[in-house]
Image (cartoon, rainbow, N blue to C red; front, top):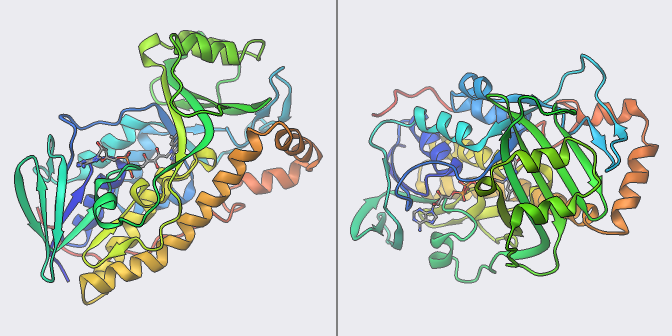
Length: 388
Ligand SMILES: Cc1cc2nc3c(=O)[nH]c(=O)nc-3n(C[C@H](O)[C@H](O)[C@H](O)COP(=O)(O)OP(=O)(O)OC[C@H]3O[C@@H](n4cnc5c(N)ncnc54)[C@H](O)[C@@H]3O)c2cc1C
């Protein structure tokens, strides 16, 4: 079966979906509300499962070229700088660190020219038996299928999943940034530092830069500080270098603040000829570094289902059955991890557990095949002549 799909949203999820559809001989129109395409935000890591999804999309080499090995799961530190666990010299790592814009750019370069429309905010969609009509920027578009890849506050979900509960605040906030690291002292190979109710993450990213994120407990959502950078610095006063230096070195305007929210589990990702994907379907706490990774997986599984099933409806039902349990299990795990790291009781217990764990066991857990989430294998997409 081939056809034409409208993809709502031109983030990592929307572009990966367009690319996956291209691989199975479908056409796609990507409608993005922003005037220009690009990823706002800072950095991220991708694990072996996501890298396999990128391979199935045909862009693994391009992604690896802009990714940098990060030892964030191997180097666990305390605020005084001591290592709870540390990578051995010469040890490999399964994770790559990315600037968001770099990974987004890899996907965008691979999507056929003319498929992505900017300044096209979707405001309405009307499914019927034969297809779906979508209104964006005063224009009506028609397709066999619509995929809502429009993020945590998805308009597609709001319109067609009226029973879905809204995103909920998880009692934590994050400051994020990317900065040049040339000349900065300290371990910049990737690490996580666990302090009281807070964690500080470092991933190296391309072009001699590092991504950092400070996640801390914050009882109320939406609080704003006059000087966000100075507030972030206060929260890590006395922490080991390069933690304060990374924040200090980041231009004020490049320090981003975001509250941590998740989407309560949906009862389905598919409704007739409309499906949800990525954060629109399963926005999760960032503690397992899997939100975008699972989004890439979604795109591959959706395309595979469309190539294998006789109707759009059957394909979307299959996509829902294959993706929802895995996405929701990872989201649950990420929420629990986040609650532990930000809890004044849970975190010391976690640190004690890590301390007690033999180094060999720890290494096994952070090896590419040591982690059940990372072991995911994509379905193989059929070789079909692509449509341009
Ligand atoms: C602090 C933090 C750290 C994270 N770290 C990681 C990590 O290390 N690894 C990882 O895999 N994931 C990570 N994530 C998760 C990851 O950022 C998301 O899962 C991922 O970006 C979701 O992509 P998406 O395309 O589904 O949604 P989005 O990136 O939100 O993209 C949605 C797009 O839709 C557009 N849009 C919205 N509404 C409309 C509309 N009505 N019409 C048209 N367009 C519309 C938006 O403009 C946007 O371009 C992290 C998240 C956070 C908050």
